[in-house]
Amino acid sequence: MIDFVPLSTVPPDAVEALLDRAFGSDRHGRTAYKVRGDGAALDALSIGAIESGALIGTIQCWPVTLHGDDGREFPMVMIGPVAVAPDRQRDGLGRRLMTQALDAAVAHGQHHAMMLIGDPEYYGRFFGFTAERTAGWRLPGPVERHRLLARGDRVPAAAGLLGPHMVTPVG
Image (tube, rainbow, N blue to C red; front, side, top):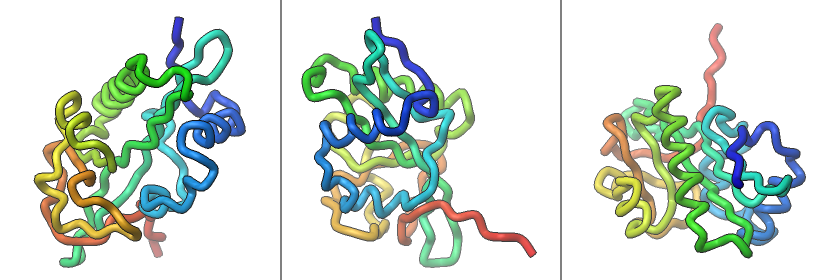
């Protein structure tokens, strides 16, 4: 039986080891890492899949912002990475993790503007993500435009730079 638990309850070294197995240890240079920056993942939306005491899958969600060329800022949730242990891939676990995270986003009111970098056929077919409103977005690294996907009623169709969500100090 697979238990879905808050990722914050899983030892960070176990998460890093799974991510290395799923994506390689060179993953930190990817554009997605630059988009989300050094901030913390959203605890309520980041989930681990545990089976027989072992971590076999994770999904992480991050606060990001589209910094519009017109000065407006559009907060969003970036989904990913979705990591599944190599010996458990093709079992539907990634889809189950996505469903868990999307359900958590609805429960916490964070489902209005979500984005990811991924396969448009898969994420479109199963989860309703499209590239319809992302054409004007710039990222801090290379991206295949058709893989820049979003969903939600507050996804901006604006031009701007996608990057970490930063809280501006008051005062």
